[in-house]
Image 1 (cartoon, each protein chain N blue to C red):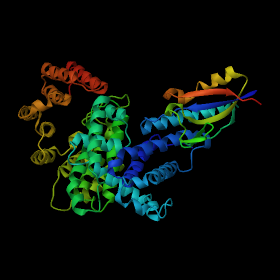
Image 2: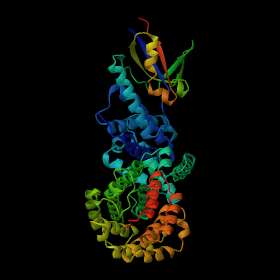
Image 3: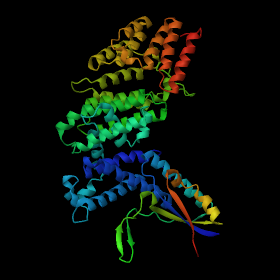
Image 4: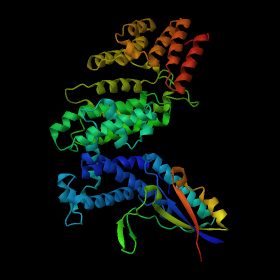
Length: 420
Length: 110
């Protein structure tokens, strides 16, 4: 029997969520130990006895038994969740209430509770994202450091601090509290959005890791949509934008592994099933009075998805959508993307004017695609030497070998006679 | 052919889920190799990490395997090999060695 490559990782989040529900948020470390123990047992048992019929069920059952051992041993200490006594019928026999915690629905609820707990408002956004990735998605410190192009020590520190806040929060988030749910929901959506973006626009050189980040963000958004309180228009919009953007992932690199901008991607490679799903979600998001940044970004992605060629894209509408986005969530990146759309609609001169008008462009000074955008537009209006300088600047800021290669190609393009 | 037992000590406790799964796959491959070459006499049993140690004339009972985590025997197998040298050679592929553990190779007296 073949295992899915990331089976353990997927199960880790489910197990730790249920166990945290049982032991209480302040015992997160204990829950993590029990999960680790279940993996150790799998490592030691499976080679001898063979891989069980349902590896996921085996892992969860092992975690459950271990949890019972811990509860029996520590029962008198009363350091666990207050409802602990309900878990036992007698001194040592677990009650049906305890078994019920391991039903498929209960596990999903606990994953959701974990998601909301990780997005504690006292944590900075990047800490929330790291915590979600670590606890719910089962990424190790090393793997997160890799994905964020950060150091092991920095991520370790961030996680240790965040876990302290988590453990001090004393209660595992209660998703049945309608008010609390709605209050924290935007923070959760934002964390999932940032997780997706880390995969989609992040710096990691490894395509596979980035796709995994996107996939995890989509999995968690789907989980959110399954809950009646979570399935808000904003969550639908968030899911729509993830599907529509992720649909382009297969075309972002050509067969030789070279990065492809949206203008030159082979659009037949886009994932049309994901496009359809995204459009369906976008339809479902179109209720209520609130227009979120996710609605607008999804609408922009939908316009790209609908255009068979770059030239068929409705750039005028995209510019107005970016205007709205700028009003809701102003950022130099949004302004840059808007300027690029203006250039597509009204030509490179106007695009460059718009880029030069970005007030806080200093915040983009390390972002390689800022210089690259200027290079692209200068190249289009025939100022090859200026364009080359911009691409050189972009090259010096390249975050990984793929970007390096991409900017080198653009520098070469400045020399060739044949410019589009 | 003679029989030997491998006693495995130590375990990977700090790996991420992905690393744990890769570690498991390495064990699986090693086991299958032993089996395919006809060296695996008994697959043995993993040992639980709990238990007791009974010591001395006063029969004092201690909880647990009573050793540092890295020294705890986590399981054993019985292999067949021509001699100790071959049994030792075969043990060198054990993934436990990659994670700071050890394999004790002991001839079984018959």
